[in-house]
Length: 640
Image (cartoon, rainbow, N blue to C red; front, side, top):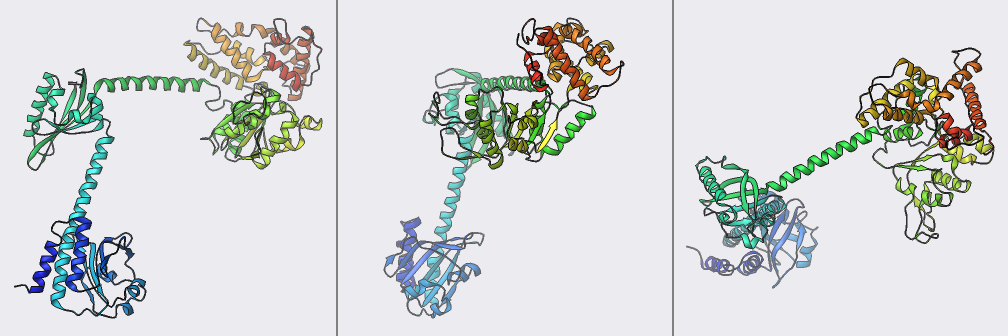
């Protein structure tokens, strides 16, 4: 038989908390506990194992509730309760035992009694304690009362933990359903809809409320209703773990507005509290088929674009088997992984941009931008804005802010083609970017920092220009960190044949033609021409030949008819220069020959470069190419 005190305690713990749950329950419990035990304080806490802290769910002290109380267990009387998972009783001298706990002195605490609250697996989920400002003897009756309260506190805390877990799982399930692209409908044994996700409402063209408690049969055509009923029976006959069926795309569903659409998906069965439920997952087959068509179209477009990119010269590895080109490739390999500035030199049409692209692709900046700037193509008055950008109102016509090429290339590479065309005033600003990595946009006082690798190219003699005061010497040396010279096509031996074959394959595939390999006579014709336009000119000749070709034999002769005379003259001149047919000329001799040949063409055409009777047409090269060669060779001419 319980004593009167125990009976009173039981009434307090039952009556005082019977109608309460959660926070209200714990507050009532600790207040009643302090009353029964005759202590100044009592508290129940939740244990946070990761932080090794206790958070009060209810704390009664000196006749009032303490709000938002949380503390670390280390150095407190609660630590051995949590660690040992046992009841701990300290009858007196509490402050002497735990001098590091400042709250004990503030509360004038003398004694303590604590017990862990455990989950069904025996893990600590909280604790219940009392403390007093007088000694608390080891009275078995008091401890028995204390354990009654502890059992009630543990039960409520376990209930709350279970409720939290159920709520968390419910939230996870809801998030899963709502994130699904397919319509998900949960049906009861009468085929009434008891749960739907947002995708289901979209699929049927209505709200969730419109679907809830409605029969799925109202959203299917008659044939599909019969199939669903048949599927449900079949699933009921299947063993647990195999209660799923595929719903093929000839399944017809009906929207809220009674329009129909083909659907596909799955139907599965599960049981909850001895009641059967079904999960129907649907998607619009028309949307899938349209998506597949779009994917196919995009795949074709992607392949087309890839093919187009492959057609761009220089996308694949640079072609060249000659020793001079192998030296270029080795130079690219050595410098690519560094951040060093590279100066590419060579005649026009030799492929300097392709070399720059190769350096960028092989560098550690390959996933960053490669920004191309043709210095000769930018008007002088806009060049600074083009390079460094400008603020709104920086000059007439600057109606909005604009980023410059260096800002766009930040983190990547900038390729300055024809860098020898830069005006002197801009060269100083370029030098600052190279040295300091900073600049100011036009109209701005703000300094912009950039991390850009510079690759420059020119067909001019920058060293000679710097000696003449036309190019800053300090900029020249800053650009000339790692020079790469691209040899002219006429210096590359049998590379002419390999390049011609590659161009034939490329243009024939693009134009849908089948062309036989070059004949020996055609190869001799290619070798005999000096190619002042270099690889670009060779590419143009081959493209023109493919266009002119109607059969399988390449119409190279017709394509080169405009340059046949110069080619023959070139052969004669070469023989004359060498003193005998077949002697190989040096690069200097070739340059002299080219200079003499161009001067002869200019004289023949009365100094005219472009047009029907111009020297460019006579030589069979573009007028821009001829202008570049005239500058490079220092030829002075009288205008027609």
